Length: 159
Image (cartoon, rainbow, N blue to C red; front, side):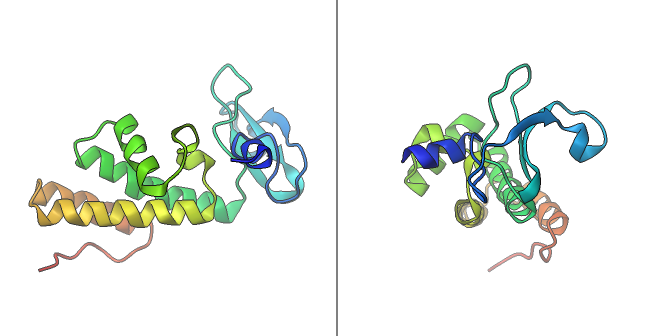
């Protein structure tokens, strides 16, 4: 990973305009404080920081990237919760699948393309779990619920 990519992935540089973001309270976005964020106001891009620190949770994201991060999390979180993996083990597996460095394999650090890759990789893995009849009813219920929440058609059983 280049120095520029590292600066972007760690929230130290806005990926849209290339400027340094400002550390500010999240109340400027949400109307209520949920902690500090790095903000690039001209780009409407921001990222939260770890509690009691100034370390960003990932890269700054505009509205479109925030939408894709949500989609990736919906599918990936369902996978590790249903698939019998810890969250840490799931990220390690994802790192291998994506061919990314483990330290930079976190949805918070991903661009739109990596978010889409994560969504589809996780979806296929979930489908394979379904074919092996791993808690079929529970998996169907959770997938159906998550698909509806992200605006995709409901889950249907595949033969």
